[in-house]
Length: 410
Image 1 (cartoon, rainbow, N blue to C red):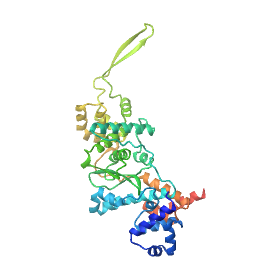
Image 2 (cartoon, rainbow, N blue to C red):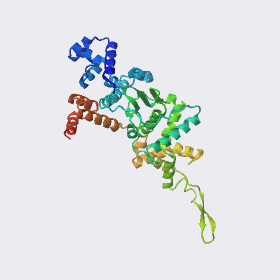
Image 3 (cartoon, helix red, strand yellow):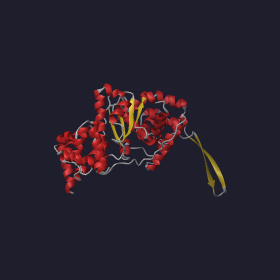
Image 4 (cartoon, helix red, strand yellow):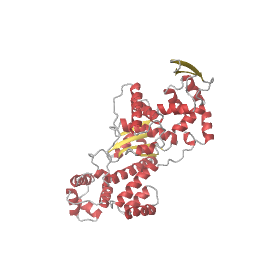
């Protein structure tokens, strides 16, 4: 956290940018002018309530004053440059701002609690010269991340939660058509991911993994957007390769195929040692004709296992050489049949059609609720501030107060 002198300098600079006098600020706060003078000189402490009111007065978030980072370009300006559609859509502008406001609230609470997060995830940044580089770097990083996180070859149960545990804000919100997500790394909020709430859960899951790749490779860029229009860029191909390998690791796919008794050669030669004759015996095992063929039902089962779409699974099987080109074409031609089977089995989260169910975003709510209750327990925020946060999180304020009071009694 910054010291009193640094905080005072930022308060003075913010006041001057707004063209306000110390007397005007003092009157707005209900304080004598000398109190504002002392705040700006660093000789008087600033309470949480005062800092919140000053932030509102200066058009900033509290985290702006508490961040260790140097002052950066205003987040709103950066975001409107990256998403020009926001200017023509009040609804889109409001929804994106709502999530970013929660991110800023969370960053401010972290700062109040002295928990400013420094990214612990590795930085895999590397130059790209070809599509081959993009695919190799993405797949290598995915396997390394799985080792680092001790995931083995198992499916990832909750991609958004996994990212949140790395100190990255995650949520879904309304985004422009044709945009699946974006990664933001700004001093006001820290590393953050937004994915398109208009996409079905199976697609949002892949988008979370894709944007996580940008956090690993491209975090020197303030905003990285993922759109149809930039899909051919090498950084986007690298992020797609990462997401596919991270969600569907080679060993995991091979193990799942073995569980289905599929994907093995039609003829398998085995050699055993004959101790009596001190020699080797060779035997050939033949699978029943057609038994090893991977069908649309197998691909749908694997998609369910790894929590990806049918199409993503088919392409992953091809990239891992479990199926060839003609098999890929045949499976893709069967995607409507596969969707019928998925619907019949009740695996509706694998579909990417029809009305989109509202995205449950428990990770962000859980993070902010935990931070706000802890800040209240440590008397860093008031009861009124806690109620305000409850309103922003759309949770029952009286119940949150009751739960927070219980932590003070422990």
